[in-house]
Image 1 (cartoon, rainbow, N blue to C red):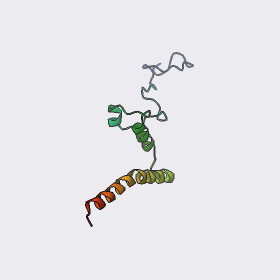
Image 2: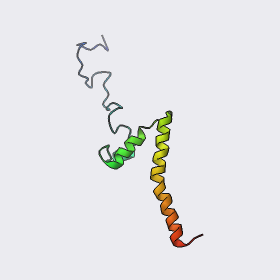
Image 3: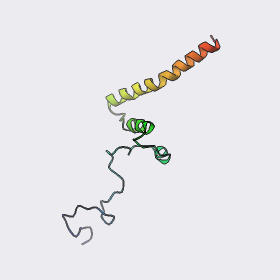
Image 4: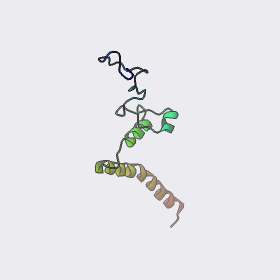
Length: 94
């Protein structure tokens, strides 16, 4: 019969099994990295890759995740705002 394994207690998944999936499960670290990040070698082991992995796991349907995303935006955006303010003050533009 087609589709029935020879040994029903065989748990070794191989390429001949219909349920074989070569990709790691979604809960493994680094699986939600953008393709571009993976292509340049970023993983969850380096700081930039860990940040991308963390941000990629945020779910917009959850309120707490949206709050975390806004906090991250403020944390990473405030230095830029402060730099622009200081630049304007140094140039004397009013």
